[in-house]
Image (cartoon, rainbow, N blue to C red):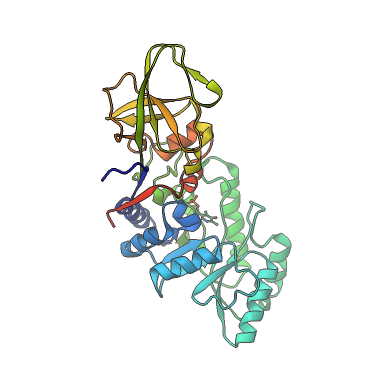
Length: 358
Ligand SMILES: *Cc1c(COP(=O)(O)O)cnc(C)c1O
């Protein structure tokens, strides 16, 4: 039944296929990054689809996200928390904290001592982002005294690329060189390096565990080149009304668009409160019956308006495609002046979610 709410379609089969494609191309293991509710698509369904495809390592940002993913997956696969554990969370059994500085290392080693057993952890070293990860001074201290890591079952040493989406950026090679140099000064352990774009930078960026996120969800990890990934998201909003307006009639808030000719306007049920960014005002298009229709006027909180003058007369209840074939999250991002990641993670809570191909 067609309701009057917009429908977000998540193609779990495409997400699984994207993971298998990356996994087949890599000598090492490939994780699934499902932070921010699986980039807005639903961490539980996405993680279960990845698990079924063979993925055994998952990354989230927050402890609460990790607990939800663990609940969705059951015991077994690694679920690591990129932002680390908050104080007192050492008992978060079954989750692995990423240690982003020496205070995190000290807290985890203390918890291991108190519990009388080694505790799993991932050691994050900064190689050029100045965001999270042990800095140069902290690394010197650890390199000089490996006992600082006593009691830790270090699953991986990881670092994160700042410019992987710009292959020619000199920071990429510099980070690869720094990561290799740092690893020689730490106890031997597996490494985790590339994000989605990093997977396409070549063998220097390979590791024991890649950490792709965006590519799994169909965002182009190779900007400026054809997208090697399958699209995973569709969004369709129902037409609430169709109206005929004479030339000279303004449409929407701020009267920012005025019909230059007699026009037919379709008003659909989605807006910036649903993550259809207001920056798209007057810039984007929708797809109606396979044809592009320009978005006119401002994006409102709950409504957007399209000029459907040049397509066959639609009926209320017909749906206009906002994301789909020919309207990718990357297209919307370019129109809104942002990145596909922000388009996906902004997707709202009011959509009916339709999971396909699980
Ligand atoms: C978000 C994130 C990833 C995944 O990045 P993508 O660009 O989406 O592939 C990997 N590693 C870390 C540390 C991250 O924060």
